[in-house]
Length: 262
Length: 117
Image 1 (spheres, rainbow over the protein chains, first blue to last red):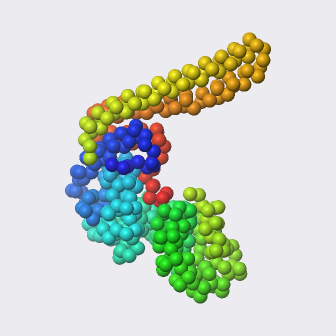
Image 2: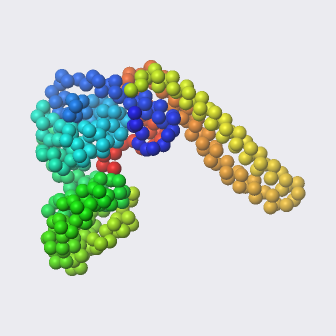
Image 3: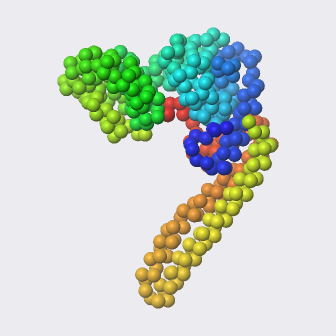
């Protein structure tokens, strides 16, 4: 099982991670289903319990218990394990897979309130960033079924660097990693491709054309996209020289490489 | 998934391998140290202090093998402790302690990977 947070092949680390994965897998087999609070939880589409939503971080079944089977980055049943089928960007049941049609369900008091997924075409969706932010900062709101945070707020609160259109549309991360599917550097991703509707590089989209009010390439717009660096508003992304501070969209990739840590 | 017993058996293999690597480092460290000392003694005997330069360099180079030896020993302690933790502690506590061991050896830790990607 690949649970390693990096690609080192240290046999000591490998053995310890295998032990952990096995211990967590054995614990995950027997979640208690009796208490009322238990019904506020995350459930994978294959029926796997993925942790209780509770403000008690010491509860072994809590999704926030980083030493528990549902919160540890080494557990095969944790959404925080980047190599598990529930946390990997490629896992069929993962919250981070932008293409999955079977993401986990968020249940509050036994009622499904959202699907936690990076797949934007799923209806009734909650973004993973918003979910994790709510878990860590607004668990009461989450347990009421009304987390106060929106996806852009969660991205800002977690210190991400990204572009956002004036109408709230997310236009990609500034992370200079061409393999990150959410990055504008990924030429095959939804925010870096010349053919995507949500890419500033698509000359025919609302966010890339010369005539759209939300486009950075419209010389006369007063509503261009906004750049957030480490969660903070940094500049407008526009060719409109009347707006300040601004970053030229033709140089956004170079700018991001200089300013955003990899 | 392999069973705990299989994994525990593998611990012995890894421990043996670590021990072998540790010995290689110890021998290389001794060679490096002796070379440095020899150069230093030569410098004193001949009165040519240019000969002390290699000893300064080799002493500086000792930092890496000594650090490696220290790391390998820490890993061996962790490997030797893991089976005890599994047998003596409840599984939940054993998992917690092994995860702490991993984090102290390799760093990292909080479950905020999601937001850090």
